[in-house]
Length: 316
Image (cartoon, rainbow, N blue to C red; front, side):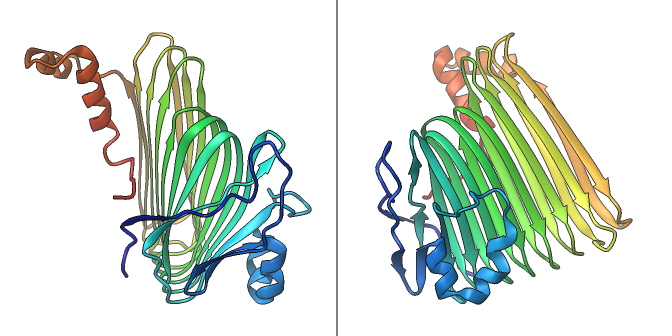
């Protein structure tokens, strides 16, 4: 299936402006049947789909007044990166989002974090569908995220997150049917007194599923990072391949990192790996670059860039 590499953004209008009350906008047409719906409008337009999926999340506001749905119909490949619209509740960016990708469809979605951000995102990925979610700190002061994906047969969910603010994030991938895949990669740059709390859950409900989780962070000053990782495999989910790893670089003595990888495996024919590493940059590498004319600031910047390779993904 074609992947979405086009750098052209579909710039959606915000539902409202910062610090103002929410104004309902029922539908944004992205072409080829792809659209962003107010949740109540989606329920009216696609009652069967809504009956199956809208009930999956318990994190949304009871009234669902600010929720919206991004829907990609069957056999539709969206080549441009779609940027999610922004809703505001008083002084907070508040996004309650369902992303539904039908069978044989593919889309890349950009979600920018602004100000103080609270986000609940539910991703439903049908058979042979692909969803890539790019979540990017963009002048955010603090971010609170709950992201959950449900993958059907041969579906692919990829998430690339970049945080440079205090953040509290839970990411759960549920692989419901055979040959579903998920790949979660998070990069974090902490400074001053910022804190990063990330919990990942890779839940395998079916055989022949695959999942990866990779968390990397560089911590300056008195910043802190904490990663709680869980791989859970049901008894019937044989021949699963799953891994979770985290790596943190401490740039100052007062910086702190904590990692707790864990496994809950009921099947007996699986391949699981987990690991954690906390340390500092290699002094020999730094001296090597200084000896070849780089100043210390540029040398550290180059080491940071190399460290985050494999984690960050931006539209090319």
